[in-house]
Image 1 (cartoon, protein in one colour):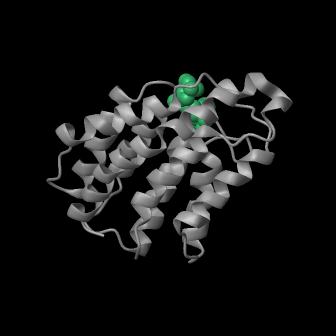
Image 2 (cartoon, rainbow, N blue to C red; image 1 turned 30 degrees about the vertical axis):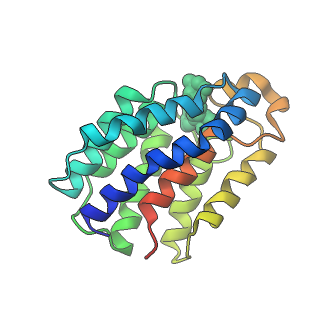
Length: 191
Ligand code: ADP
Ligand code: MG
């Protein structure tokens, strides 16, 4: 995938987050404060004006800076920092090997910034499973990613606002797991 294609895919996320705003809000209402939909949409609505497509690194970096200053909540700094971290290892064409490098940076950034590991019912449960699957040469489609998000229902939250719900968080899907499905789908592409 080249810079122009990723740019298009990132810009298209604005429509995705517009369409899914209510879904994300509902998920966050159940085990959070109900702002995840509006947070994500605000970030991606700011993107067209802020993107720098002069290189893959600049595209990822400008996306990260925009998300950091526009999304808000816990998720804004996490996604923002991750895109900045990915920009530091980016090359101008994303092939399979480069995709693994980017997803490693993504998962590491969330783990580090969120002080989180897999199984705590956060976005990392989708991001790190996607990283692992791509690394193992598996095909990761939107449906694959969605199944990872569905799997967070069974988990008890131990990080973020959802952790206040303790065992009552079980049975609900993590909102950040759902938003990361869309972001990963844009990064992974069709191949
Ligand atoms: P807030 O919780 O501040 O209202 P959002 O609603 O925008 O922020 O984002 C909530 C999502 O952020 C959660 O569903 C979860 O996936 C993610 N999240 C929260 N805290 C952490 C953390 N420490 N590590 C990783 N992800 C986290
Ligand atoms: Mg919230």
